[in-house]
Image (cartoon, rainbow, N blue to C red; front, side, top):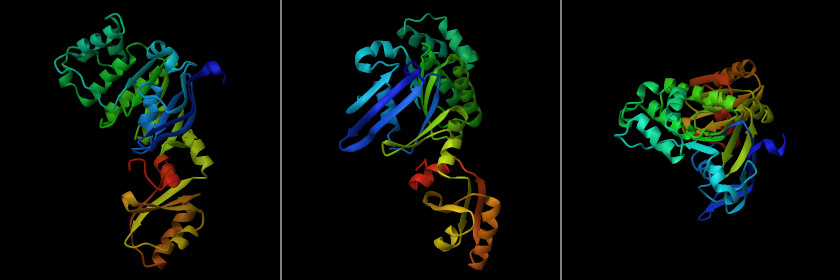
Length: 311
């Protein structure tokens, strides 16, 4: 892709807080119209990185540019190109949905008619006369999304937009976000929902201790890390690790301490599972739980760091 197609570019960005490295020499290109998911446990550096892209924080070293312009040289211009929605947004309780939207539209000198377009876009039209205090969690997030989209930003940053929502409300938000692709909107999404990243985004970035561990589509990440399928189990006592790792088709052994389970990454479940059951019987070990499945992002992160994304 050419330089003109780059929406966001970071070069050697570093940020520390009292000796703690939040961003460690990070470089990144995000292209126009690309949807990128930023994943990592609490403390990985996601929020700091996003705040620097938004122009809220300044890096200690390195550079950040949006459409080839830095915040230092074009702040007013860039503010018009970026919109963001946080995990929680506080509204004035005794303003209606419509009044809230009209208030924010006035900040951008946009006409009140724009509110009707946004309400239709997010399916909030029937709630326009409802006080914000009476909105459900999903409706509040839709209103926050309306505000983020008010000025039709070219870059949209969503910070855990569906945390705490029920599955139906989460899907509603997903469908709204997917429709923005036709407008060539560039998206950065931070989330702890792995299926959300897989469903919405073209590329996944995995952060850990201020650096990127890996990036790519889920299929690319699994292929690059030689990962295939997983057998996860718990038992009344542990079997010898050397015997587990020597089972046919086993690629890697890990302990999922947070769930008190053992994890085998395998080439083929049908090859490895019968041998695992045979080993358990020979070792007089009782399996208390057993799950066989395709790999997901949490498995990938566990294999890289020994931690799960929600730790």
